[in-house]
Amino acid sequence: MSSVSCCASRAAFSRLEDFKSLAQKRLPSDVWEYYSFPSCSGFTLQENQRAFQRYRLLPRVLRDVSSVDTAATVLGSQLDMPVAISPTAHHSLAHPDGEKATAKGAASAHTAFVVSSFANYTLEDIAQSAPQGVRWFYLIPQNDPARTKELLRRAESAGYTAVWLTVDQPRFGFQNRPESRMESAEGTRLPNLTFEDAPKDVRSSEFTAYLSDNLKQPITWDDVVWLRKNTQLKIVLKGILSAEDAKEAVKVGVDGICVSNHGGRQLDGVPASIDALPDVVRAVAGKAEVYVDGGVRSGTDVLKALALGARCVFVGRPVLWGLACDGAEGVRQVLQLLKEQLNLAMAQAGCSRVSDIKPSLIIHESYYLHGRHCPGS
Image 1 (cartoon, rainbow, N blue to C red):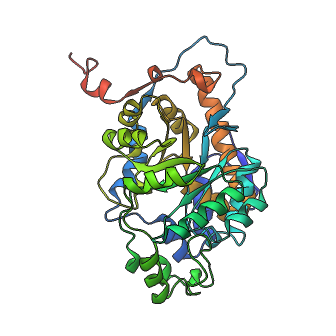
Image 2 (image 1 turned 180 degrees about the horizontal axis):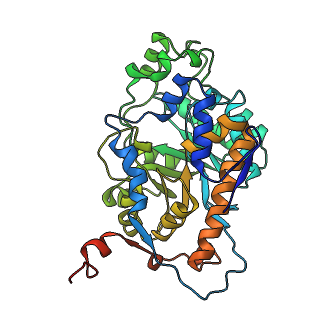
């Protein structure tokens, strides 16, 4: 079985759950709750993981898998594996080096990192911490277009090669921001979301009012068109679940779509990301790259997502667990574990390259529970 050694615990970790358990012990309770909380009942958060269990793999046998290559090209960048880091907020709550450590961990694993607008370090500082890393920027547009252009200019100058928009968050719910009630958030900054006129205390009601006044909400398709006209960076829309929206995204010229339900932190009761993935893949018909995040907890989950048509799989919370365990090294170990698990799963499924992973490799359990294999049929 694949395993990595968490330097901080001196233990062999063979599951992402091992990192989760150690992170929960190390993090202050308010930080753990902030990283973990779902919306409403938590149905969607739980469904993201349960849904993977409903898919079955159909391995091909007697193939030469003496050598397995997990490399993939995503948004024009060569990665060592089709697994990258989703945008998540406030990494400095998990480790003092925050997103700088996450960037180092991603670069050492030779994969990509989507830096959130809610990062605690500047785009420039994060880039300088891992100059050779592949990095993309999750942008939250400002009400003032000039300020949005300034953020784009900064991202381009710092070597970010794509900009992501989260499209499943029409309202931010500023009045209920968890950070405003967190002692651990005292002293944190949001330098890629705010400008020089922002209040200093991110926990204050004045800061909440600043966000409400300055961040554009909701964003619409017109904003995507505006973005296409105002940047040379590749554009990815994160948070699409329907075939109709996927087709519209292709019409406005996006480069990628990330099928996502925001890790179960927005509208509760929507489909698991992995369940929505096949319809989006069919709707896009190869005219844009398609990715997925939400509920990925093993290399086998990655394999299932790739078989259903994802070009790359993104992980969020597990990276925060690794960061809390051992900074940049913990992030690298989480990614390395997923790579090792994917390598083994590919070999067991008869795939020596990512291009060998086909839709015929996977089937939904309903085929066996309700189809022609039903007992007595």
